[in-house]
Image (tube, rainbow, N blue to C red):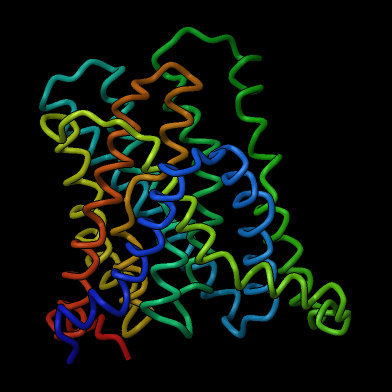
Length: 318
């Protein structure tokens, strides 16, 4: 059995160290966040997806199950936050912001490094399927929520949905699936396969440095009221629902533990970008990203301790 201190120092502390380094570098040099984000989205994440999926021994049925599970988590978060907003009598503008901050979580530059460290054999690979589902959700349901509180014509809404077709991760997934069918022919092309592996190996460090820069550039309000509800639903409601879903789906062992821990990821940075682009409360969205990212390390440490202690019998890591 692992102690809370051991879990924190071996899984969460390395993440915090790299985030703090990114934060400090931005304070010193005022780094270009847009460039860092583009390198993550258009280089490191697609390379990671292509390498891990094409060379993974995880069956396609398992990947499909992870994607279905993720959709259920997203839908549950949307329903819970909608009900909370209705009880609080929030206006539609605030309701959409709360849903965005709880439904769409950081499965990329937080989830992949975390689960790669916590579960080296399967965590990062399974999280790739979560990331793919989250990318599709962000630029479909996320855009719909962000535009739902303003007058738009149909042509404009469809134009706003076009970014989904520009996401390289989607094409990386399709390519990796095709390569799996044909036995990964890239594996024999050394001058392509080795660089892809080098880039994929750099994702964890680069993604966390980028997250530190993002946090450095955020100036959030106090985490009270609606913002407090957003943090509670995202960080506590997400893993609680994941516990129930793993039992319902009959998922057990390390597989279940990975999905539960992944559901405790903080609010995705893309929610703040969508809020800014489409006129939702961008300050609220940025604050949700900031506080949930800082709080997630504590929550994840406790969840891992609970899982290793065997308190959830069907989700004890192997």
